Image 1: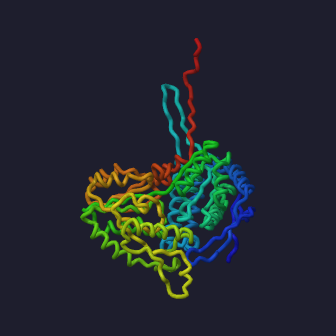
Image 2: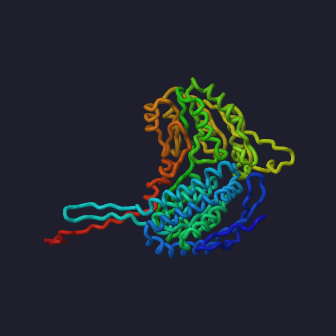
Image 3: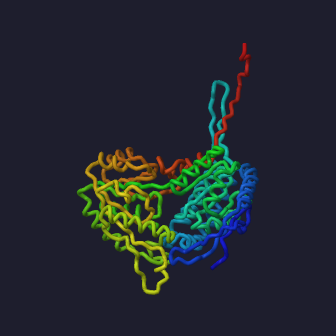
Amino acid sequence: MSSDVPQFINGEKRSGRSDLRFDNIYPGDGTVQQQVTTASEEDVEQAVEAAAKAFKKWSAMKGVERGRILLKTAEILRERNSELAAIEVEDTGKPIREADTVDIVSGADALEYFGGISASIEGSHVQIGRSYAIIKKEPLGVCAGIGAWNYPMQIACWKAAPALAAGNTMIFKPAELTPRNAVNLAEIFLEAGLPEGVFNVVQGGPEVGKQLVSHSQIRKVSLTGEVGTGQKVMQGAASNLKKVSLELGGKSPILIFDDADLNEAVQGAMLGNFYTQGEICSNGTRVYVQKSLVNAFIDKLKEETTRLKIGDPKNPATQIGALISREHKEKVLNYIDIGKLEGELLFGGNIPDFDNGSSLNNGYFIEPAAFFSESDDARIVREEIFGPVMTILPFEDEEDVIKRANNTPYGLSAGVFTKNLNRAHRVIDQLEAGMCWINTYNVNPVEIPFGGVKMSGMGRENGRAAIDDYTQLKTIYVEMEGVGRPFD
């Protein structure tokens, strides 16, 4: 077992001073890789103090200077891609072929994008007769980022890049299950020239997150996580009315019409259900297929899915890796058992049997599963599973499927597959979701905003909209006519 995973506060790594410790486990074989010491209340206070002190210097820097540091950080991330991707695999259990091409690269993309626009963050001018007003965009101050475990480096960058570009400082708490790369990012920031205290990392569970959320000196919290956690964050943030961005869960629909390209629709549904073992918040796990296409769709889906190679996440040939933890594996298996009672299991859902004696048999693997259900009331249709479990639901017509697709408390994502672009836009316009795709799924370039509506959250990651979530407006009215005598 290698050394403990540290905190990163005010430019240096240090061990957490709490008595609480937890294991960092490799999902591929269940072995303990490191231990992590939870940040104490004193650790969090010191991180806040460091970030508050650094804010004065960082916010006073020119945008082009801040941008230059973010661009340099992105360059170093790309240079160290292989090393950092390997750590993502050890923490998450996802296949190296994904981590090597997506996880670190998408984080670098965010740093490049926001580094490039840091110097162009601007307010506006309003002429009012001879008088006028200046509306400035100012940084908020100290921000807290709370990450999820499915894309550790990407999420850390998605939160840090716009926050830092706008002149804020940040304290980032990675998920307990994936603690390592946030510390590596902090070190790389420092190497790129980021002043000490601008980006800090504290390790721990809900108790550390709660302290960050309620802290009076933290002016913004950005969370990626579950709906229940998001509700607690909003409640905690209400004590001092800090800004909140919430990127939460979903039970998103994919609508496949009978004129869709069958191969494209199947690949899109697989991308929206089985990539990263289904552990993606925007996944389209309710796959509505028009009745005349259902049989052909199921046949093609089974043919393509059964070809997927499940196994050692460190093997470049592997396409389906391990779920994040033993507990999560049991949760997903429980939903599969529920699904067997509610609908028809078409294929998959088993625990793979690796070679006798293979350490992978101790890992957290489940074969991708597909169900068929006539009912939208089934639990596997209504509840977020966050695993490689798809449910195919037949539909009659446009009006029918739009109503059913929107019949959920969630509103993160939605997809439509059809060759009729008029229909595609007509349907998308009626779907209650923050991120929508036509003839593809789960494509999230940094240039466009990503986030949900309804119970799937508020605020946006990426795009210029993210800058709005990390700035506040200051209006300055300049009187050119004089006050006069208002009481005469």
